[in-house]
Amino acid sequence: MNNDLNKVILSEDDYRQLKQFATKGSANNEMSLAHEISRAKIVKREELPADVISLNSLVRIKELTTNREMEFTIVMPAQADIKTQKISVLTPMGSALIGLQKGVQVDWKMPAGMRRLEILDVQHSA
Picture 1 (cartoon, rainbow, N blue to C red):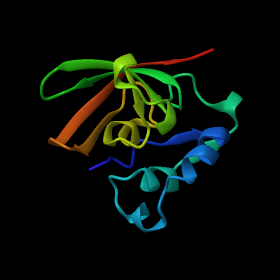
Picture 2: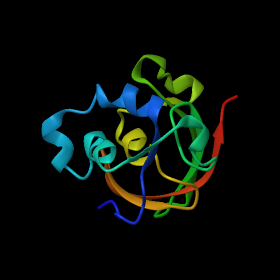
Picture 3: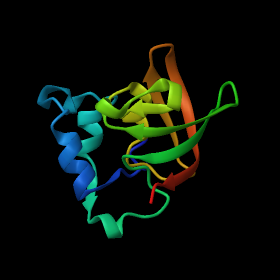
């Protein structure tokens, strides 16, 4: 389950792009993009903290049960390309991480079951 202490912060631009994918009925599902968007604090792009994951952020995470580290960029569905390590914000991993800050741990349901992830680093493209 997602810890409500893990604040979700989205830029106005990201919010506008993401809300079109959030189905209204799924806002009650804590493991959905719609839920994450519904609880997000919306800020101007220049007010977004540097360590918050936004669209096009390069993210390094650790899956805590296996200690496996992964690095990828979170993108809109049309830009997703696993060969170049670009994952869609609509995937379980993308939905779990969007709007969270470096250092946060989050539990999220993935296709292989519940996973605990820790955000190790966040970099924004110029």
